[in-house]
Amino acid sequence: MTSGVIFDFHNTLVHADSLQRWLLRASEKANEPAAAVDQILPVLRSVWGRAARRYPRGAWDLDPATHRRAFEDVLALESPCSTHLAAALYDTMPDQWVAVDGATELLEALSSQGMRLAVVSNIALDIRPRLEELGMLSFLDVVVLSFEAGMVKPDPRIFEIAAHGMGLRTDDCVMVGDSPTADGGAVHAGMSALLVPVVDDMPLLAVATRLLARR
Image (tube, rainbow, N blue to C red):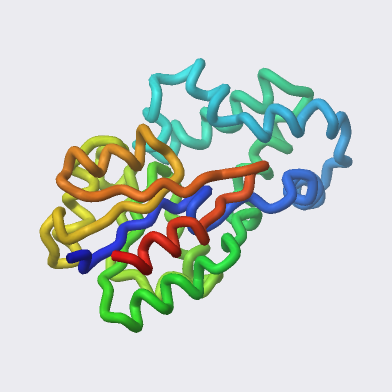
């Protein structure tokens, strides 16, 4: 019987708001007119996929300095984005994460049922402040971030850290995320895994919600 649910962060509980609004906000912060928007946006949309070609896969998720450098290098080297604007985009990154429809309500409902809850994310930013702003942090028992844990999904150990942090065995938990590779790695820790489909950049969390209701 499931006693704990572990959620991925990006494209599961949150998704990116309008990239164009993010770019415009960053331009204001940098006091720099937004130029060549049509050339910058495609690179911003695929920044981490492009980073994978410049850095060993996942390395940026273990070190905050490398995380920033990977992001800024891709934008500055592969688009007309200035280094100043790239830095402003990085600094404002958390602002463009918004809650997936029904995410906060799902956490509240599961918590009210006595379920233990966690987030496990491959990231080198502290996402707790944003989780708090979105009204999610209070429902979470554990937040495990790769740069703090020293490992990235799909390493089974990162899922074990979350389970043990909730006071549970791994086979008492289910992992909910969007990546078959990263989040699906939970099965090697002895957990079930539910995959959230992402259609047109929008996570369909309701699919996982229905499946969780049947467990």
